[in-house]
Length: 157
Image (tube, rainbow, N blue to C red; front, side, top):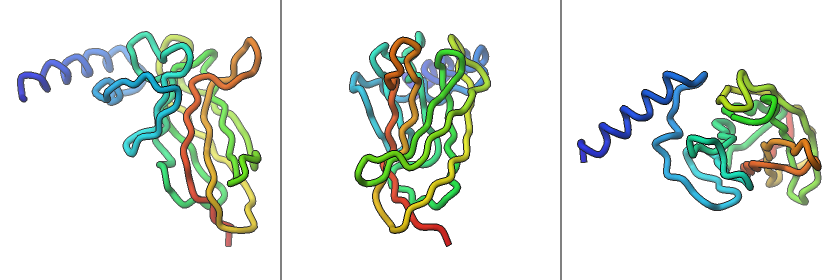
């Protein structure tokens, strides 16, 4: 067991030395699904399969699936996307967009950078919702590398 962990750890450390963000995703198993939500981090490989290192193009650290959110909410994670632009939208239980914004990662287009944004919203009642984080296609505006986090939206005080 130790013999398997040490090489993986050394690989992760050597990759993180060349990255703007410490690499913890390198130890996570990869997936071929188009959208995956996991308890530790929301990940996707999207149509292009993520980054050259095999990591997801977008990783959302907060909020986590099932979190109860009041306005304003904070979205944070890391991404390796075109021009470092990360698109964010909040959907209600009916799939209607309640709010949208974007964040600029600290690095992009070939390197991983951190991003963070605040999003204000209004909901008259407690309901299920979803936060979607993605890269907007320069070609047609479609959502690339979509990460969807199911959450609970709570009215403000």
